[in-house]
Image 1 (cartoon, rainbow, N blue to C red):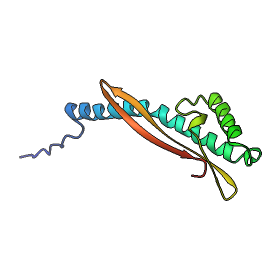
Image 2: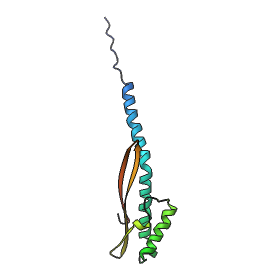
Image 3: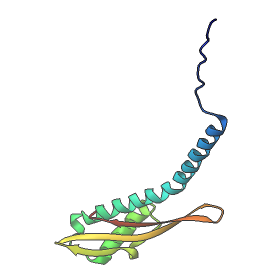
Image 4: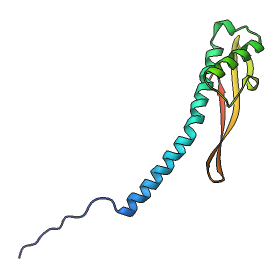
Length: 123
């Protein structure tokens, strides 16, 4: 008598595929909702570092520094903060700029996500 060895089935079931697809879609949607907030944070951070490292603004009046940030904010389309939100300080003869702000992103229905950002020119 001949014994036929059956191959064990391999693969993913339909319910498993639907479950993982739902998880991937949820994370993709979450990423697409949050990406603009993080891109704006990166633009704010770049602007702060550029202004703080500008040799022409090292001994500038705070009003000039705020004006410079305002111009960069217009160019980089920064809307989360304005020049009045900047905290300007001196650390060992170096200008340090920082800003703290919060962004509320609606996810779906009445559920939102609140993210706190802290950007500084020396970090």
